[in-house]
Image (cartoon, rainbow, N blue to C red):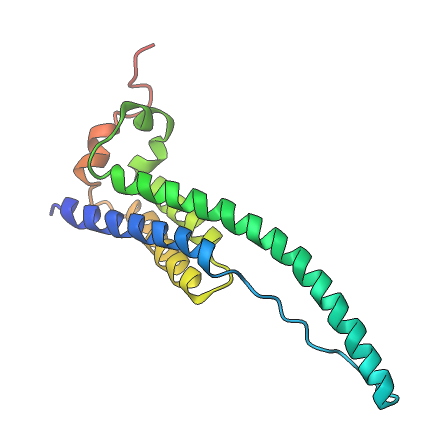
Length: 170
């Protein structure tokens, strides 16, 4: 059976989900919550003073953590958008450089591991990131498993670029 169209649709959906997961990195920053931790309360004034100090420390820690989280989210978002666009474009045209330098995209196992990687870096913070990362990661697990099913052949765009080891001339 030829599943080329099915794989093409799945790869296009994964590309769109990657792009949406990358965009979600810009709009849903993680929030750190500092809950008061008082094991013993001596008096109401001590509680108020501890609350002020704890609030100040939480604000300082949260601002530092949010700066690190923001830069992390920007980098992950940009990479996810770029990789999503590349995955989508590979379904229409395969540049010769891609088959040479990113040959892992032309096997089920390589593409599956790539999808698992991208899905795992999207898993953080907001529910939209978890949904995008889970969809991409589970698709990667399915692709990696398909490598070991001999009755399923790779789609046409994977076979065209896969010339085998040492096929290029030196």
